[in-house]
Image (cartoon, rainbow over all chains, first blue to last red):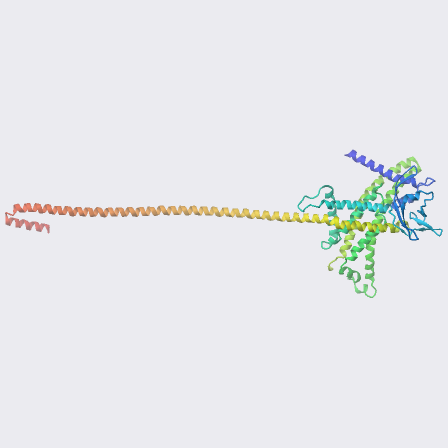
Length: 359
Length: 163
């Protein structure tokens, strides 16, 4: 058992080092210097191809479809591998600048100026990762739900994987959603909050896997957390009851705080937007920071190795230990952030369903 | 502003679609089925527990009823037994009484009969004695009547003796 554990640990270290070391070669400039910022930003950001590894300076990546509408209003759809076919990385007038303001975005030259295409709904790395997670979720939960077909209440409870998923779902359902919204109203919101929880949790976990089909920094992307926060915002405000709106526009504070100058109502109204905004930023920042720290620690290995073998070996050991620690911490954070997002959403929804104030 | 702080419209678009798809599908075919089934099972377990408790109570009731029935039967049995003893005693006593009465009656009858017999016998003896005495008398008379005056004297004497 102990030996097996050690083997697994070695394997993890090897995979981590392998997976995180390879892109570094790609980022080494002609002068052999390592651009840490580029590595970190490149790996936490989005891209039009799914980079897997680089062997002898030759990139191996999965080309992804590019779907764009150029500035004249025509749609184009082609594989991102086309960019590598020509010397200048141009295809049909489109190219992806490696630096500058439009770094990583599909651009075209209009009137001699570099300009982004009008609409870009390409299936980027994050989008593909997104759909992988969606399919995984559908597979897991609809698969589990199918298990219940032809089952009656007096049949045995499920065992194994279905039992585990059932337990997990009921944990979220009972301990987070029901506890925070309240017995009376929670049923309407449970599907949304469960979906959000498992979406965030799975995205966080898969984001930690360093190789395909994982590794995209999905929940550490502001667009993703923005949509999640938007749904929470809608869930809170669409079904908010009379007491909720009364609390915002005519809160129970001394009259001078709300009558000639509506100070409290303005603050409360502002609060409607800050709550989901906080959710959005919290999730994004936690996951982004986690990825950035792990990547930075990886870079330490290569920077110190350039300084000399002895320093490199010493600091690399420290760095690997730190990386393993950070990855374990990120596993914890993956769950905690999903939990926090769901719990706070549930609390805010619960606040929008308060009964008469208890003084 | 760094690129990671500006949400990418393309990803925003796909995220919106993907999340809506997964939400709609799971809200329809996923989570409600799982939570619903668990709730149904919970309800079933609660009902089973309630019915088990009820059955236990019923069992206890039945046991108590049995106990009371048994006690009642025992009481009844002892009552019947005592009644039977009483009745038999009564019957024996009655029979004794009757027998005594009968015996007394029989004895009385016998006594009366004996008395009657003895009376009859007395009467017979008396009549026989009278006959005999008459015969004796007549015989004596027939012999003695020769002496008139002596006879008369004797008759007088006898009469006075009788009276």
